[in-house]
Length: 331
Ligand SMILES: NC(=O)C1=CN([C@@H]2O[C@H](COP(=O)(O)OP(=O)(O)OC[C@H]3O[C@@H](n4cnc5c(N)ncnc54)[C@H](O)[C@@H]3O)[C@@H](O)[C@H]2O)C=CC1
Ligand SMILES: O=C(CO)COP(=O)(O)O
Image 1 (tube, rainbow, N blue to C red):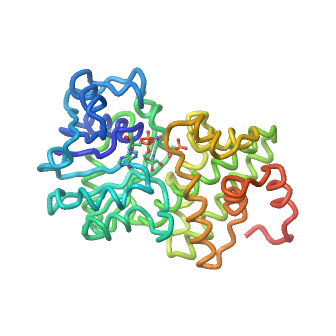
Image 2: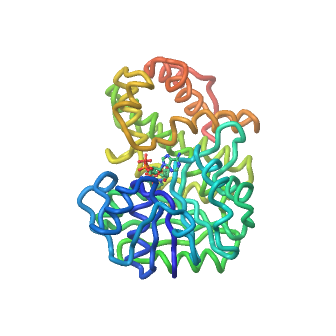
């Protein structure tokens, strides 16, 4: 397959490696010429994935039209909140029948749309051409070829299978799904729960607390998903529980790490200065909270994470508020 990967950060680069290792010819698009040149000439991207060697089947450019020229698959890994603006500039260059894969895990501020919806709306791509790839996929582990599984979700089963085959390597095992909505929500909400988990770790809370956060975090994710029409079983799978456990338990997770900074008492600005890469949950906690409210779905953990991130609330007070909510049945 001829593929393009737009975005040369950690996930774009690891994803390009998977595609290259599975046999595709890949052209990456990078914003900076230094990054494109390093990928093209030295087969690495030290700034995003130190020590990783990329296949010679992978090249890179800063010219979007060149990157997507003739591509059968275009995978996008830019920050969720920039996607709409990016596509306004790029979409005219996409080949008419290309599959567009969203690798992003966020919900757009203001519109409350998922990334696949932004792609359909802004790039004029039919929904059945959009694939979502999501699962327990920490980029540095994948780049180091540590085995993992993922989900390729698309309403068009044949297209999902094509992408599944284009991604299969001995260290990356893709499963297909038709639940695009559930996979996207699972990925976006787990970033917010990982922020909460990081805060809990930093304030010294124990394993019972952390297990309760994961379990109740998944409960509120599923509640929102079901209200919006997702398959509840998706949240028990790789794009739900799998991704949530990976991000909460891993020190590689940028969202968990960001939460740790906040839990240590740093302000949002201090945490942003200390962490350079994209932590999607910091913005998506706002849009997910608004989406939940719009559908009358209770998401108490998301509500508290938003208060800590954007209203200066103390994480210890947030825990207290969560623990003293009205008593209710588990489900
Ligand atoms: N890093 C990971 O392990 C995983 C990340 N993701 C998701 O992938 C998406 C991208 O994340 P990463 O690659 O990890 O982030 P990153 O911070 O490593 O890289 C982001 C990339 O986007 C580019 N970028 C930043 N602002 C931009 C703009 N205004 N216009 C165009 N490009 C811009 C940066 O130059 C960089 O190449 C996020 O939605 C994230 O949640 C999903 C699975 C795994
Ligand atoms: O989505 C991810 C793993 O599946 C990456 O999580 P972070 O963005 O928190 O690093």
